[in-house]
Length: 247
Image (cartoon, rainbow, N blue to C red; front, side):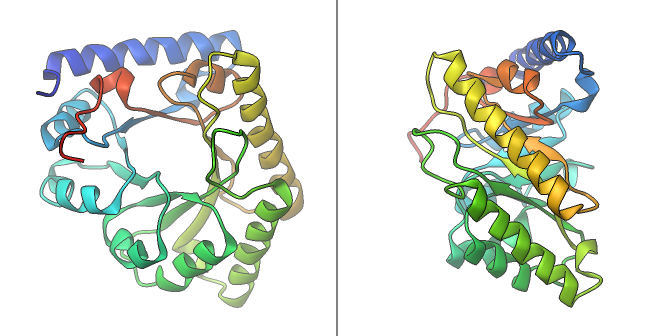
């Protein structure tokens, strides 16, 4: 059974307090950090509870689960944004484009190109994040900075061909997953690598809507906030342990 709406609201408030303290310790404003509720393996009623508690960003790892869960309730989630945060297979791109407002976890030039060529004609802009591999436990993402910059080159070339493309396919930032470890120095190094990659992209390309860092999960989001995260992706700390029986 999912946690009650009251428990979910309490958990969200607790996470926001921790974000605020971490931001303050780094000389940042908590308002600069958005909180995403990761709803993988959690039911629609948990999504509604999080929304009523103030959440406006939601994340799902799999297209199939998002397709079953969100369309029936989407009309009730006014001003909410649904992000694909798992690896997106090419054969799922068309379906993903009908469900999600943002695609994170883009890990290759080929995947980025496939998304860009299919994203035209959407009623709302699609927001894109390139994923950088920053730790041994994280197998997904562009393998290094040079490859990630190749992805940025591909996006820049796409914009050069279509002057209006930036209005409906927006490269807004980078994302990563730190290694799952209790060693805070390893986690911090992962997040600093992503922040450095962001600075390199900004110096080279000057994309008008670029600048977000999607990093930090339930076990490490406070470190991520201190290292510059603008979007933390929280599941367990909001909803409790996932029910994987129907996965």
